[in-house]
Amino acid sequence: MDLQNKVAVVTGGASGLGRAAAQALVEGGATVVIFDMNSEAGALAVSELGADKAHFIKLDVSNGADAETAFAKIVDDLGSVDICVNCAGIAAGSKTINREGEPHDLDLYRKVVEVNLIGTFNISRCAAAAMARNTANEKSEKGVIINTASIAAFDGQMGQCAYSATKGGIVGMTLPMARDLASQGIRVNSIAPGVMATPLMLGMPQNVQDGIVANIPFPKRMGEPSEFGQLVVQIAENSYLNGETIRLDGGVRMQPR
Ligand SMILES: NC(=O)c1ccc[n+]([C@@H]2O[C@H](COP(=O)([O-])OP(=O)(O)OC[C@H]3O[C@@H](n4cnc5c(N)ncnc54)[C@H](O)[C@@H]3O)[C@@H](O)[C@H]2O)c1
Image (tube, rainbow, N blue to C red):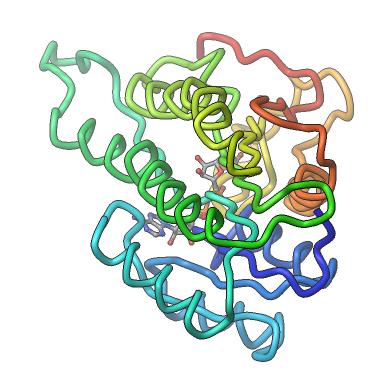
């Protein structure tokens, strides 16, 4: 799908990988609507991307009614939704039982599932409904959905039970969603990033960062958010990519801790 004059929703677009995806999509010619909880960072992103090319809606991705309202407003205001990139996510490190032998906080587990897994599905279902109303292009395409999983879906570390379960859920629903939406000309793919240089990772102590990077075969560094943005654009543009989860990780396989 050509990005020129397309409308792309990017959740979590106020920061990190979502912000980089928004940048790459705007550079490719799309108009972007950022969904995020962080109004201040959302407003800053819009001013940096250009108010004619970017919009912000404050929204919790796990809220069904708010998502439906937001998509209806975008279709009214901008005419369509053609691309949807799900980047909003939270990480919560906690072992199944802690040092004192107490069980994992169940509310914390539920919260991670709500935002990462249900949030991704919530936005995707609304995006798909909006895309299904588009007129197909010359390649019979009506839309593209790109989810953000993680390599923790495959090699989750200690303390990542909740996070890995949600990311595994995103990998698991990629193919059935692509199959559900095939008759509508809507493709669905996921990206499983490795260790990316976002504020989250760069906020860790230097020795922790060095330890993480030491395990990455090549290139021996964290991934750049712009490299994530590059892959988002490639998935959107390449009409034959469908139902797949792509690792973007410099070949790393995470150790247990
Ligand atoms: N950074 C990495 O190394 C890495 C690796 C693998 C996967 N990921 C995944 O990539 C995605 C983006 O990560 P990041 O590093 O850019 O994080 P980030 O914290 O920089 O950005 C996440 C954004 O999501 C927003 N957000 C959080 N909860 C929300 C909610 N309920 N509704 C709407 N917005 C919400 C935040 O406000 C923030 O702007 C996440 O899903 C994360 O799990 C990141």
